[in-house]
Length: 137
Image (cartoon, rainbow, N blue to C red; front, side, top):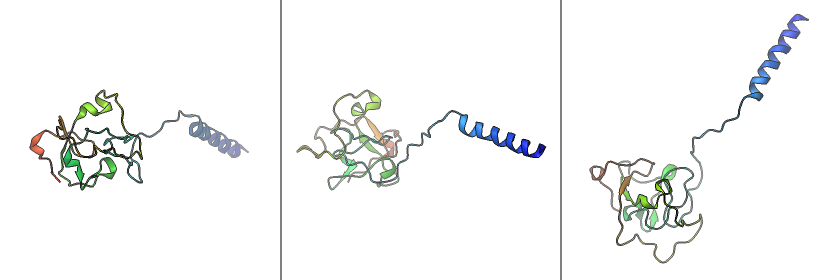
């Protein structure tokens, strides 16, 4: 009888710890599946929202298609390309960004007067400037 009470007590305590603790959500941020359908590319960090026209420089596009960022990046391993981080929400941008699935407007080509002020590698890392050498497609 004593063993049965001990087993019941241990089981009850274990259930309290398993159920009663505060719940936390993992912040891994990696998503498996299809890349976001954004007309001018998407940011290289979770939640991978659509980037506005002018954020990415021309080297981020090959044949008019975005080479990808984040888990869907499919460029060279040593690639660093120019971005204009004044169009980045993490840098205070509050203007309009396209919605997922939205079609590009006539101005789909990279801006002629593109002003890149940062180099990124497509995986969320900021580069050290021209020393990395951006790849042009």
